[in-house]
View 1 (cartoon, rainbow, N blue to C red):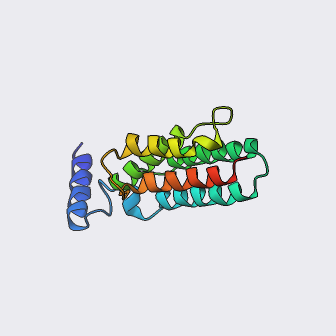
View 2 (cartoon, helix red, strand yellow):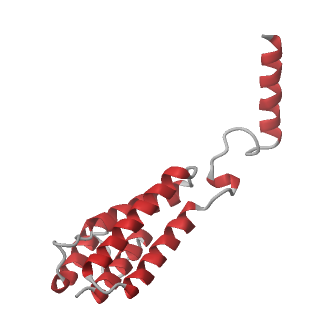
Length: 148
């Protein structure tokens, strides 16, 4: 019992002397993985794959695959900073609002864009400030450009 208390006291003392090195450290602080960079990389790859896709079904398959990969990466890696977690949550929500194959109509792209903006940043005016919404709108723009 006494050994356990002494060990605990030593760990607490080390934690106070070297904050962030032993106790209470978040995954993002360890520098182990930057999940947000991986997510942004997946979205960039998504846009590149849109350019290579020949059919609408390919576009939506790539979109779904990217959403699943983002979800997998986020579950596998440690929790990130609050700002990064909020960004990734909002990006997932924006991507989830893009209509899927069968519902998607190229002539409705302006309406899709307007709907996303009004849902995620209703008081934005002419300038979008939400980085997740900007990224999602870039994906929508690429999708609309390539869709047939």
